[in-house]
Length: 102
Image (cartoon, rainbow, N blue to C red; front, side, top):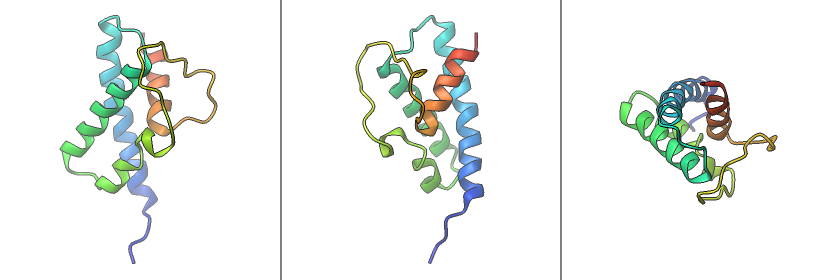
């Protein structure tokens, strides 16, 4: 039986935060408004970067996906993540990065 190793999840989350910050900085510099579709693009790109690095357990990287938490719209309307208290890890990191990296 394989057990859940929380340190591996924390490692994946820390690396995801770094990837999200880099990607968000690029989009903010380009002047892009944070839309729900862009949220999905950022998440997809960040998770792909972690999986391609190959040094993290893929099972824990997959746990960070927002699709595991429920429906997040894929529309080109501005994403207001401030009014949501409970967000998946990736969306929380995107919200924090998009609103603090000026």
